[in-house]
Amino acid sequence: MAKKPTKYYDIVQNKAEKTAEILIYGVIGDSWFEESTTARQFVADFRKLEKENDRINIRLNSPGGSVFDGLAIYNAISASEKEVHTFNDGVCASMAAVLLLSVDSENVHPANNSLLMLHSPSTGAWGNRKDIENALNVLDKVQKVLITSICDKTGLEESDIEKNYFDYKDHWLTAEEAKEAGLYANVEDTEAENIPDNVSGMKFSDLVKLFEPSDSLFPDWVNRIAPTKPDNSNFIDMDIKLLRDAYGLDEEKYPKPEDVLNYVKKREQEYKDLDSAKTTAENDLATATQTITDKDAEIAELKKDPGADPANVDTDTDPKGGDPKEPKPAEDFFGAMADCMKVLNPEK
Image (cartoon, rainbow, N blue to C red; front, side, top):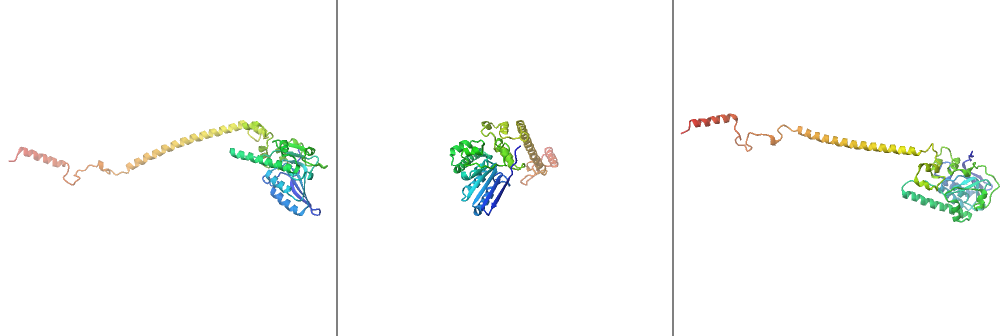
């Protein structure tokens, strides 16, 4: 069973001897957790201690964390004009290993059973091709800076550091191995009590879990961005099982391939149903609109007064105001009788 290390950030001073100790026992970085060691907090405390002390000891037991916070802390330590010593009190992994090596080699004090771990930086990226390419460019630059930082204090060649420790794998070193590699000048006789069991066989994400609360989001995030086999060429196939296995995802927590396919099919059917409903609604609307137009025309016809159309109205008078166009029936009868009488009784 892995041993849970004590986790805290603290400062202890001996004003009489003008010495101070800063303890970093946890994750590094403002972007990780409120209990983590932030660059802002560390640099402010460190500047104050520089004014009051001649020697500052920095004791580390950390899985690492944010590179950007770590580099700010590294620069503050590296640029100090006071006597600064670093101590590996158990595990110094990732960014914590770089901080351990932020002072001259003779000022690094690793416990004889302590462990050091170096590897390439990791990140998460989301977006289009350009976004991914920009993230990769940043990773390359960050890796270069980390390698340079280590070489500045150890005197080792950058090409050797990159080849041996920044090849996208985790490299665990005992204190003696780190000394043989030139990362340490000395190894202390003291023994650390804060080393989890079988830590060198752990995934990086499991190591981080030891230093953070169980309800934290960070372990899950690390599971996503810190795969155990980042050089697996099958990643490009986007095979769900390969991705889940490579990232160490819990099968009970994350979907199986058939779950994802069923979900996609369900969403596709929902889209088809919505599209069909949309077409039906559009047709119904067009029919209703035409019906309204026809009814409006009928209503307009019904609203007209009888005889309102001059073209359909008959008149018995001359439009010029003269005699009637056609005689009335009575006048026709007497006129006919008069014509008959004229025939019978012609005028002389």
